[in-house]
Image 1 (spheres, rainbow, N blue to C red):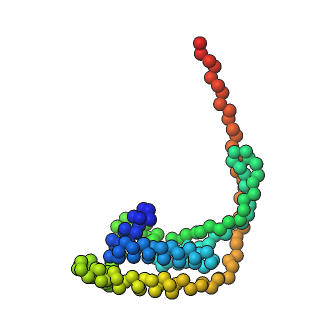
Image 2 (cartoon, one colour):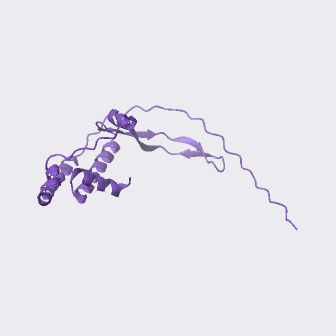
Image 3 (cartoon, helix red, strand yellow):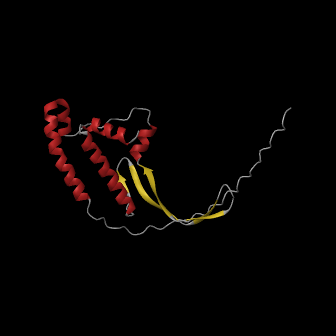
Length: 167
Protein backbone atom coordinates (compact mmCIF):
# COMPACT_ATOMS: atom_id res chain seq x y z
CA UNK A 1 0.00 0.00 0.00
CA UNK A 2 1.44 3.37 -0.96
CA UNK A 3 0.70 6.84 0.44
CA UNK A 4 -2.17 7.60 -1.98
CA UNK A 5 -3.87 4.27 -1.28
CA UNK A 6 -3.45 4.83 2.47
CA UNK A 7 -5.06 8.29 2.25
CA UNK A 8 -7.96 6.85 0.25
CA UNK A 9 -8.42 4.03 2.79
CA UNK A 10 -8.41 6.48 5.72
CA UNK A 11 -10.93 8.67 3.90
CA UNK A 12 -13.21 5.70 3.21
CA UNK A 13 -12.95 4.23 6.72
CA UNK A 14 -13.44 7.45 8.67
CA UNK A 15 -15.81 9.43 6.45
CA UNK A 16 -13.34 12.33 6.26
CA UNK A 17 -12.63 14.10 3.00
CA UNK A 18 -9.51 13.19 1.09
CA UNK A 19 -7.86 16.50 2.09
CA UNK A 20 -8.66 15.94 5.77
CA UNK A 21 -7.29 12.39 5.59
CA UNK A 22 -4.10 13.65 3.96
CA UNK A 23 -3.75 16.35 6.64
CA UNK A 24 -4.25 13.73 9.37
CA UNK A 25 -1.60 11.45 7.84
CA UNK A 26 0.83 14.37 7.45
CA UNK A 27 0.28 15.33 11.10
CA UNK A 28 0.92 11.74 12.24
CA UNK A 29 4.14 11.47 10.22
CA UNK A 30 5.31 14.86 11.52
CA UNK A 31 4.64 13.99 15.16
CA UNK A 32 6.35 10.58 14.92
CA UNK A 33 9.37 12.09 13.12
CA UNK A 34 9.81 15.02 15.51
CA UNK A 35 9.26 12.81 18.56
CA UNK A 36 11.80 10.19 17.50
CA UNK A 37 14.26 12.83 16.32
CA UNK A 38 14.22 14.44 19.77
CA UNK A 39 15.08 11.06 21.31
CA UNK A 40 11.67 10.40 22.84
CA UNK A 41 10.08 7.05 21.98
CA UNK A 42 6.68 7.41 20.31
CA UNK A 43 4.22 4.82 21.62
CA UNK A 44 0.93 4.12 19.88
CA UNK A 45 -0.96 1.79 22.18
CA UNK A 46 -1.99 -1.39 20.38
CA UNK A 47 0.22 -0.63 17.37
CA UNK A 48 3.83 -0.25 18.52
CA UNK A 49 6.73 1.95 19.55
CA UNK A 50 9.10 3.97 17.36
CA UNK A 51 12.57 4.54 18.89
CA UNK A 52 15.76 6.28 17.87
CA UNK A 53 18.63 3.88 17.15
CA UNK A 54 22.12 5.34 17.17
CA UNK A 55 24.83 3.43 15.33
CA UNK A 56 28.44 4.02 16.30
CA UNK A 57 31.22 4.64 13.80
CA UNK A 58 32.80 1.39 12.70
CA UNK A 59 35.07 -0.20 10.13
CA UNK A 60 33.64 -2.07 7.19
CA UNK A 61 34.89 -3.61 3.97
CA UNK A 62 34.33 -2.59 0.37
CA UNK A 63 32.82 -5.75 -1.17
CA UNK A 64 34.43 -5.12 -4.57
CA UNK A 65 38.02 -4.48 -3.47
CA UNK A 66 38.09 -5.89 0.07
CA UNK A 67 39.69 -2.64 1.28
CA UNK A 68 38.88 -1.42 4.79
CA UNK A 69 36.40 1.48 4.86
CA UNK A 70 35.44 3.79 7.72
CA UNK A 71 31.67 3.98 8.23
CA UNK A 72 30.41 7.14 9.98
CA UNK A 73 28.12 7.12 13.00
CA UNK A 74 24.46 7.43 12.00
CA UNK A 75 20.95 7.48 13.38
CA UNK A 76 18.21 5.07 12.44
CA UNK A 77 14.76 4.19 13.64
CA UNK A 78 13.56 1.07 15.35
CA UNK A 79 10.00 -0.20 15.55
CA UNK A 80 8.72 -2.66 18.12
CA UNK A 81 5.27 -4.07 17.40
CA UNK A 82 2.64 -3.80 20.12
CA UNK A 83 0.78 -6.73 21.67
CA UNK A 84 -2.44 -6.09 19.73
CA UNK A 85 -0.62 -5.79 16.40
CA UNK A 86 1.23 -9.05 17.04
CA UNK A 87 -1.96 -10.88 17.98
CA UNK A 88 -3.78 -9.49 14.90
CA UNK A 89 -0.94 -10.65 12.65
CA UNK A 90 -0.92 -14.14 14.14
CA UNK A 91 -4.71 -14.54 14.26
CA UNK A 92 -6.52 -16.52 11.58
CA UNK A 93 -9.62 -14.35 11.92
CA UNK A 94 -10.07 -11.20 9.87
CA UNK A 95 -8.92 -7.94 11.47
CA UNK A 96 -11.83 -5.87 12.79
CA UNK A 97 -12.34 -2.64 10.86
CA UNK A 98 -12.59 0.45 13.08
CA UNK A 99 -16.01 2.06 13.22
CA UNK A 100 -16.36 5.76 12.44
CA UNK A 101 -16.84 7.91 15.52
CA UNK A 102 -19.48 10.58 16.19
CA UNK A 103 -20.12 13.05 13.37
CA UNK A 104 -18.27 10.94 10.80
CA UNK A 105 -20.81 8.12 11.32
CA UNK A 106 -23.72 10.49 10.72
CA UNK A 107 -22.13 11.75 7.51
CA UNK A 108 -22.26 8.27 5.99
CA UNK A 109 -26.01 7.96 6.35
CA UNK A 110 -27.07 11.43 5.20
CA UNK A 111 -25.25 12.86 2.17
CA UNK A 112 -26.22 16.56 2.69
CA UNK A 113 -24.93 16.53 6.28
CA UNK A 114 -21.50 15.45 5.06
CA UNK A 115 -20.65 18.92 3.73
CA UNK A 116 -21.47 20.69 7.00
CA UNK A 117 -19.67 18.07 9.10
CA UNK A 118 -16.53 18.37 6.97
CA UNK A 119 -16.44 22.16 7.38
CA UNK A 120 -16.80 21.91 11.17
CA UNK A 121 -14.19 19.14 11.52
CA UNK A 122 -11.44 21.02 9.62
CA UNK A 123 -10.84 23.77 12.25
CA UNK A 124 -10.64 21.15 15.01
CA UNK A 125 -7.87 19.34 13.14
CA UNK A 126 -5.95 22.60 12.69
CA UNK A 127 -6.19 23.38 16.42
CA UNK A 128 -4.87 19.93 17.29
CA UNK A 129 -1.89 20.24 14.94
CA UNK A 130 -1.07 23.76 16.17
CA UNK A 131 -1.22 22.66 19.80
CA UNK A 132 1.04 19.65 19.22
CA UNK A 133 3.68 21.76 17.46
CA UNK A 134 4.92 23.06 20.84
CA UNK A 135 8.59 22.28 21.59
CA UNK A 136 9.19 18.86 23.10
CA UNK A 137 11.37 18.41 26.18
CA UNK A 138 14.39 16.23 25.56
CA UNK A 139 14.65 12.99 27.46
CA UNK A 140 17.78 11.83 29.24
CA UNK A 141 20.26 10.13 26.88
CA UNK A 142 19.91 6.37 26.68
CA UNK A 143 22.91 4.13 27.34
CA UNK A 144 24.18 2.44 24.19
CA UNK A 145 25.13 -1.20 23.79
CA UNK A 146 28.33 -1.88 21.90
CA UNK A 147 28.29 -5.01 19.81
CA UNK A 148 31.44 -6.12 18.03
CA UNK A 149 30.83 -7.63 14.62
CA UNK A 150 33.32 -9.68 12.69
CA UNK A 151 33.81 -8.43 9.15
CA UNK A 152 32.93 -10.97 6.48
CA UNK A 153 35.82 -11.99 4.22
CA UNK A 154 35.73 -10.46 0.74
CA UNK A 155 34.38 -12.75 -1.98
CA UNK A 156 36.94 -14.13 -4.46
CA UNK A 157 36.62 -12.88 -7.99
CA UNK A 158 36.57 -15.44 -10.77
CA UNK A 159 37.87 -14.55 -14.19
CA UNK A 160 35.77 -15.68 -17.14
CA UNK A 161 37.79 -17.54 -19.76
CA UNK A 162 37.31 -16.73 -23.37
CA UNK A 163 36.12 -19.68 -25.48
CA UNK A 164 38.52 -20.78 -28.27
CA UNK A 165 37.58 -19.50 -31.72
CA UNK A 166 35.88 -22.02 -34.02
CA UNK A 167 36.82 -22.39 -37.68
